[in-house]
Image (cartoon, rainbow, N blue to C red; front, top):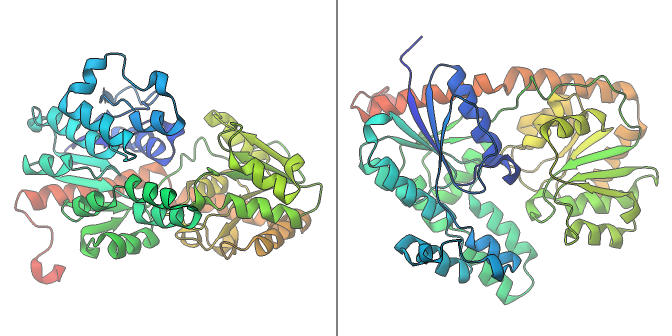
Length: 427
C-alpha cells in the first residue's frame, strides 16, 4: 500500500439531515479511513450525530443566526453566552445575519483557518466541502494544498430562486443570500476542484470561471451495502419523491401538478419536512390531490431504504441536479426511476435504468409515470435490475475514495514542486 495521507476535511454543515453535504462527509471520511488514510474532520452546526469511530471530529462554533432570523425566533436569537456576539467574528455573524446575508461559509472557513494554522504539520492536504470561504486561501498560504468538492455552483440555485421571487424585497433577499462572488473568487484560486458530473464541471467553468484543467469529475457515491433491493413486495400505485419542496430546482411543484393526470388510485409519498408551512400541501390542494399526498420527514437511513424498496416508482423531477443522489439511491434499491433531463441526471441514470423526460413538463412527466405504474411489470423489473447493477459498478464509495486519493496525490506532488505532467503535455 502506498503511503497514508493525512487529510483534514472541512464541512460547514455536517449533519446528514441537512442534505448532501453531511451524507458526503460521512461516507467519504469512512471510505478514506478504510483505505488506510488518516482523516480528521472540522464541521459546523448542525453537527453530525455520528461519524466513523476512527475519524476525529472537531466542532467549529457557529450560532446559526441566519436560520433563527429566517424562521423568526427572536427569543433564541442570541447565543447562550451573549458576550460571544461581541467578538469580531461573532459580531460579524450577528450583524450580517440580521441584514439577510448568509455568513456561515465565510465564517466557518475563517474559524477553521485559525485552528489549522497551529497544526499545519499534522496534515498533507485540506479538503473543503462546498464552503469556498475566504479562510481557505489563508490555509493555502500556510503551505497546505487545498481542494474543494463542488457538486454545482450556487449561481444555479440563485437563478432558480429568481424565478420564484415575486417582489423587489424577494429579489434583494436572493441577491444578498447567495455568496457567489466569494465562492467563485476562492474556487479559481484553490489547487483543485472535485465535482460529481460532466454537467457540474461545465457549469463551474461557465459560472465560476474555473479552468477545466483545474477540475476532475470523481462522481459521487452510494453505500451499496445499505441501499439494496428488498424482498418485500412493492406497492402497486405509490410514487416516491425525496426532495425539498422549498428548493425550486427540485421540481416538486411539477410532480404534484402531474398528479392531476394520473389515476385517482395513485399516491405520492414525499420525503421532506412535514411542517404545516410546506408549500407542497398548497400545491396539492390547488391540483385537487391533497388527499393523495403524504409527507414524511426525519427518516432514519433504514426507513429511507425501505421507502425506496417499497415504492412502485421513484420520481426525480428536478430542473437541475449537479449529481442527483436520490436517483442513485433508488437505483441501488432496485426501484424503477423517472428522471428529468435536468443537469447531471441523464448521465447518472441513463435510459437503461430510467425513463427520461424534459424538466418543467408535468403532462409529460405524468405520462412516463403512468407508463411505468400501469405498464408491463417486466419493464419496471428491467429498470430496477439495470439500476442496481449500475449503482454497484459505478458509484461505490470505495471507488469514489480511490479516485479522490489519486487527486490528493497529484495535488500534493505538484505543490512540492514535482509536477505530475509537464507544461507541454498539460497544454
